[in-house]
Length: 170
Image (cartoon, rainbow, N blue to C red; front, side, top):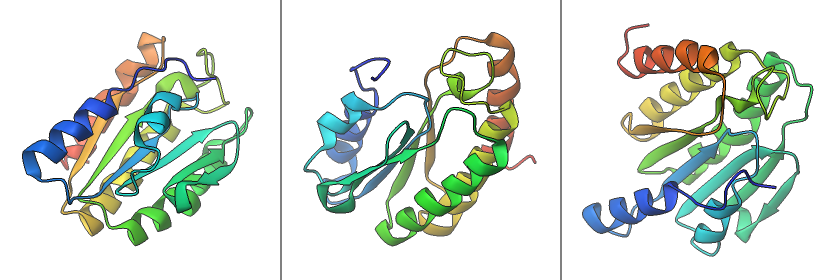
């Protein structure tokens, strides 16, 4: 189940391809709690787009360009971050994208509607991991798109920290 079938990454990547040329590769990290089925449907068969979705199933398709990682429902921050390091980071390194686009959903946090048992620090540390990776493999080109989450208190902690990380203030 995906929270919505609509994909904001579809138009984003279409715009980037049109503006900067269609030969560039893009990696999508989807850490919203629910499967990114709209994103997957749009990019299936487009092997210049890597989509790694942390959700409730494990699946590799489209010759390895589309990957689902079962993140579990009662996951510790440490386990989740280990999954990001083991499942996304090496794939993105091999893929060598022009840009990483991160669908960051804070619905994964305790008490939100996609609760996977995480604290807000798991979201912040995921941003830190991906920002460092983007510096390494794609000249720091890292775009965060906010996704699921209904708890304002979590958003008020996570997103200012994400901005500080992107601005290299922490």
